Length: 115
Length: 115
Image 1 (cartoon, chains in turn green, brown):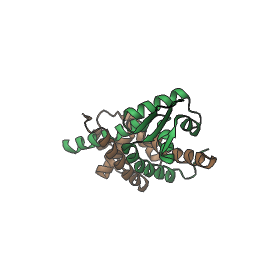
Image 2 (spheres, rainbow over the protein chains, first blue to last red; image 1 turned 60 degrees about the vertical axis):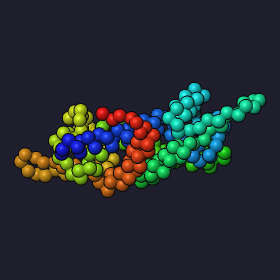
Image 3 (cartoon, each protein chain N blue to C red; image 1 turned 30 degrees about the vertical axis):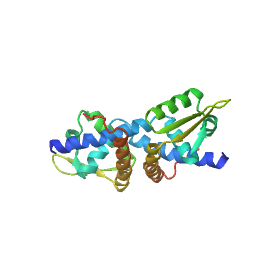
Image 4 (tube, helix red, strand yellow; image 1 turned 45 degrees about the vertical axis):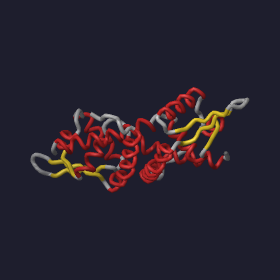
């Protein structure tokens, strides 16, 4: 194996690892998936959709995903204040890869019970 | 949001989480990627291709991936013994999803330096 193939290998896995770091963690995937399924959700709707998530975890995960440019936060200047979350273009671009990965995961563990 | 969509959501992310658990960990991705690039490799070739991996980590990761049915281990009855590793059909099926994820990761962090 020459130096180039080693470098190429490292280069590829770097992007992969970067992507996995973004979507890793307990709550980020459920948040992204929920926003994919429902397009736009308010904070409380998101919280109700994701069983077991605390306010602290949801707030932090939303901030992280917003910082990566994957979700969009829109605040309406109303009383009471209204905040809506949705996937950005980059967030939507991630979905096909997640679907492919989920299909593969399903195939690998066909008999795995998920509930 | 009705009960069905909640369940569906949970069901989808379960497969995703399962897939991510399989490919997670520091060394599994580099191993899978290296086998994808080189088809068949002997243990020592794998070790040389993955910078920084120890024998313990490589042996354990190979065992785990073999247990999931993602890589194939073939031992030749020779002296000295020869052992070759390759991706199984299931392992190869994972590659397109990984490529899609790596492309997305690259796009998200275009300016990230990987070395």
